[in-house]
Image (cartoon, rainbow, N blue to C red):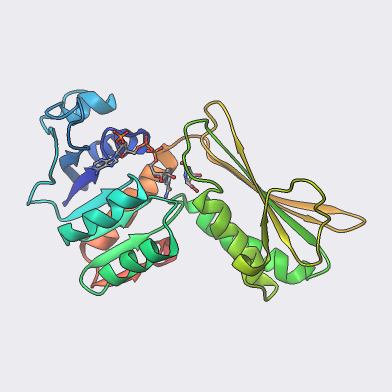
Length: 257
Ligand SMILES: NC(=O)C1=CN([C@@H]2O[C@H](COP(=O)(O)OP(=O)(O)OC[C@H]3O[C@@H](n4cnc5c(N)ncnc54)[C@H](OP(=O)(O)O)[C@@H]3O)[C@@H](O)[C@H]2O)C=CC1
Ligand SMILES: O=C(O)C1=N[C@H](C(=O)O)C[C@H](O)C1
């Protein structure tokens, strides 16, 4: 039985995670951490997440007995929470290069899984995107287009960067050197650039399109998340992995291996 505490339990993903952990016969939800001063402190996590009373309550600090934490909060909170020192699965996106380095360094002390998208589909698609890019070669123009709900804070999405890197790597480029984020004014396409575009609106759970254009054809690789449950199920799978893994810095590729 894996004892899991959800950090950021009052958020959109936090509630989905609480439901997913409560539904999993191999896991026990032992706690849920919310921001200091949050009105849901003391609330039953089952009731808060819509799963029905669970007898486990939202707190400001995680319970000692957790084997592993699942963290979907903000970049700042995620880095601050590394001090808990527990095995942790991190889904938070929008981390700076310095914040990512801090997360990586935590892997020297405990098991850390960091993934901008916990769905099986996106992680399989990463290989497909890399391979399509490799086979089509540098003559094709690549554009990455992502769409998310109106509440999403970071842009572009962590997944757009993840899949953009795969496309770049596939044809021997470094994504950060060729990415062009949106276009405005006089902005003709330069050879080899990868355009990245973030659409925000409504309740869209998450859509990612990697489009390859030549003069004569258009090849599109698409992932649409239909429910946040797909991310939560992946995170719970990663938590079971992290709870028994050696200290190290892991990705979903390690979890799904
Ligand atoms: N890897 C993946 O598969 C996925 C990743 N994500 C990422 O997960 C993150 C969260 O997304 P989402 O759930 O939609 O966002 P929400 O804003 O709904 O949830 C984040 C929650 O974290 C809380 N929080 C902030 N600081 C702390 C803290 N110090 N302690 C405890 N809780 C805290 C927030 O509280 P408050 O609102 O009061 O600030 C909020 O309830 C984003 O970075 C998003 O991109 C999302 C989906 C899938
Ligand atoms: O904020 C979200 O909602 C999502 N964020 C992740 C990202 O930034 O890639 C994953 C998913 O697309 C949903």
